[in-house]
Length: 328
Image (tube, rainbow, N blue to C red; front, top):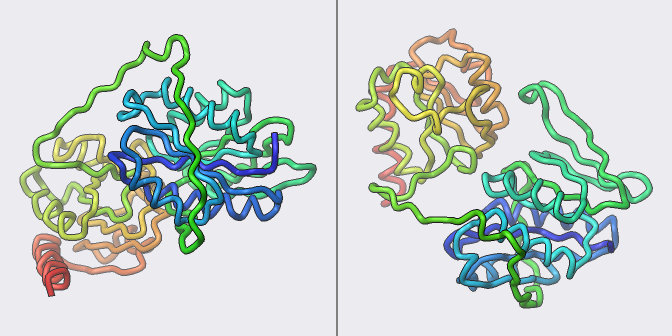
C-alpha cells in the first residue's frame, strides 16, 4: 500500500459522471498530505470521451479497464475490474461518487480487497499515524459521524455528490491500459439495458437541479407543469411523500426521510409545505427556492428565495422566462 489516491471515474455511455470530477478534488487534497499521486480508473467499453474528460481534471495517471463485457454496469465484473486496478496502483485510499453505482460498488470492493469502507462521506482528510478521517452525516443531517479508517487497510470511500467543487485545468495525465480478466462467478449477475419511452429519466439523488412538487399539485396530470420547468432547466423531477402516497408520482422520485436524500445546486419546491421529513432529505441543497400560497409554511424558513403565490400561475411563468433566457 502506497501514498497514491485512486479515483473510480464513473462513466455512463462514455460520459464522465460529474461526481467523478468532485472526487478528484477530494483526492488532490488527500494526495497533498500523503505525498502521492492522484490516479483515476475508468471502466467500460467505449471510454475515450470519459478518459479525455478525467485526464484534464488534475489526475497524474489514468488506468483504463476496457472490455465489451463492461459496457453496462455489472456489480461483480466492475468489482473485479476495480480491484485489479487497486492491486496495480496500491493506493492509500479509493474515492468514488456516492451514486447508485458507487453505493453498490464501494462495499463490494472493500470486502474483495479486505479494505476499510465509509459511505456517503461529506469530508475526508488525513488523520494521525497515516489514518484517513471521514465525516458522514447521521440522523438525517442533524449530527455528524467521524470515521477513522486505519493506515494498514486501503480506505474505500464514497463521496456524496456536490459537497466538493469539480476539479479542472491541469495537465493531462498519462493513460495506462489494464486488461480485464473476469473472476470465477462474475457471470452470476447479468446486466440488461432497458429503454424507456420519453427519453432519459434523471435520478433525483444525482441531479444538479431538482424541481419538486407536493400534494398541492392535486393530480398526476397537473405535474406536467413541473416537468415543463424541469425540462427547460435540464433538471430532475422530485416529489414529496404526500404527492407520492397520493399516486401523483412514483416513490422513486420521493425526496425526504423515507425517500431519497439530495444535495443539488438548486432545489425548487413547488407546493411543498416543508414537513420535517421532507426537509431532512433536501436541507443540503446549495440554493432552495420555495413557492407556496401559505406565507407561514415551514419551507420558507429553509429557503434562500421564497415566492408566496399560486404555483399554477408562477411555475408556467418561470418556465416561459427560462425558455426565453435559453433561446435569447
